[in-house]
Amino acid sequence: GERPFKCIECGKAFNQKGALQTHMIKHTGEKPHACAFCPAAFSQKGNLQSHIQRVHSEVNAHRVLGASMHLN
View 1 (spheres, helix red, strand yellow):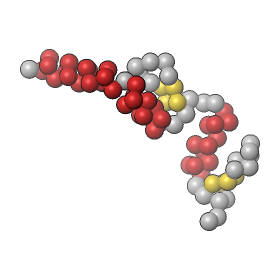
View 2: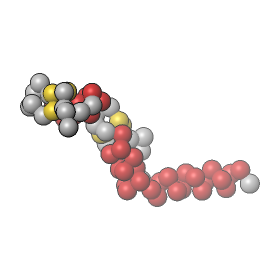
View 3: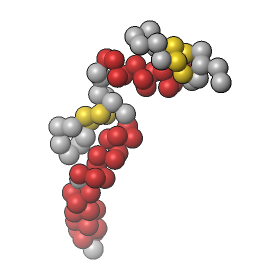
């Protein structure tokens, strides 16, 4: 398929503008998706979500259970 959106840094081409924009973060090092539970930050939202589920699932469970216990 056609890939009209080309990275000016490395030449990799994409078929969607959004995919190129996501790719460009690799070159800038930007990590706009910060974890609310620790200092970790990620370039992609999906990686942050995976991190929270993997690393902080117990923290989330305690928060949810704690909140529901206070409602009773």
